[in-house]
Image (tube, rainbow, N blue to C red; front, top):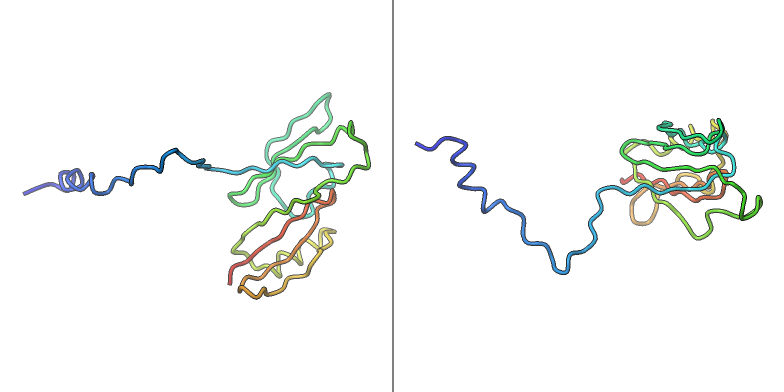
Length: 145
């Protein structure tokens, strides 16, 4: 009588993944967007968890921020391209969550965040709200319904 290990080994060739398409395509395991902030101290109205920080001459120069499995990087602008340059043009990050979107939006507003669009149901079924962070980076939060 075969053992469970022997049965598993006998099945192994059938369970192998199919050969990869050639030429091999890009496969990512993680995506970590990085943004340049005007003032790191006021950047987080969304309620991220602060991770690693790095400093230059004792001043905060950048940090990781986390929300669940997602990580973003923030770097302090050195203003070499001008203090008043507009950031975030043409960029929108879609953030999918299972959290109650209305409660999340209310918490963001309680921390001083201003929504670009209040939570609303979309024609395709998801509920979304939109916000621009203090530097103008655009984020859309999505809750599947």
